[in-house]
Amino acid sequence: MPPQVSVIIPTYNRGPYIAEAIRSAQAQAYANVEIIVADDGSTDETAEIAAGFGDAITCVHLPHSGQPAVTRNRGLEKASGELIAFLDSDDQFLPNKLTLQVAALAEHPEAGCVYSNGHFFRDDPAQSSGYVLDGMPTPSGEILGALLRGNFLVPSVVLVRRTCLEAVGLFDEDPALFVAEDYELWLRVATHVPVIYAPGTVAAIRRHGESISRDVAALRGCALLALAKLEGNRPDLRLSYATAFNEGYARNHGAIALAHLQHWQITRGLSHALRALRYSLRTPGLGTKPLLEWARRRRVRGTAAMP
Image (cartoon, rainbow, N blue to C red; front, side, top):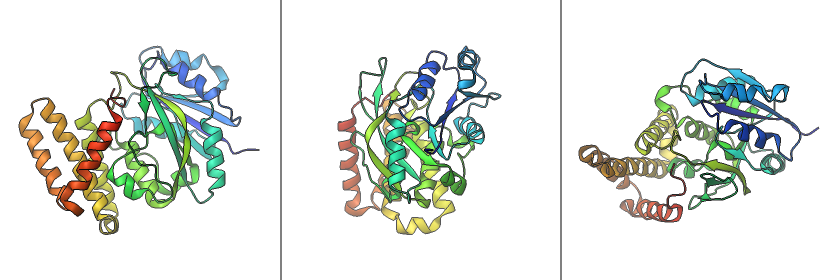
């Protein structure tokens, strides 16, 4: 019997999308799958639509918290699979997602987690507007250094072993980490086990105006908190990954500065720009390399990833 995969679908007021998400998990070529929908107190038709799938899925009804970490964790607590997949309720799995990634973990028993690519779409999931990993690194094995420089993982392209989550803990439910709770978890995972890259496109990631990641300044501010938390908990890593930490801080402060300046918030923008410069000057080449890398990524990615 192949290992069971638990697909966790956190949701809140996603009536127009939730059925498509569930059906994409049901349509997997991989057979041994359980689907758990964790509903964060939806006030639209989301709960009724999910209930319409009957015993084919498990529904977890929660009081509204507004925290994705809380919703995912309550779904995880109901999961029985030895492998865990996360599917945001406005995204869709492609049919090969689990077959590809389960095989990759079987081939690499030392790895605790696998990730692949995904494509963005706006209306039709068959029409790609770009790819998650456009312009991004795809390291395999020891990925912590690359991950400190910037997050390149989204939940729907990841498959993780339950034993890995038991070792490092679940999503941090601190509200301050809102929208970066997944990044904070990936950082912990990467300090504990090898993470491998399995080439292939496994998910369709919807971009729309209701996406919780649309506020760039808030998103990058939470990413800074995730970096600071890891540094505080593991000061030994600050020494061995000094350049990666400095580049990560510089890039996030730089992105916040740009977001503020675009909205004519000059004082805030300049404050973060100065902090970005301070961290950049601590890197080899006085920040030239991370600046050029940021410009290259921005050019390659374009606007595909924007909500």
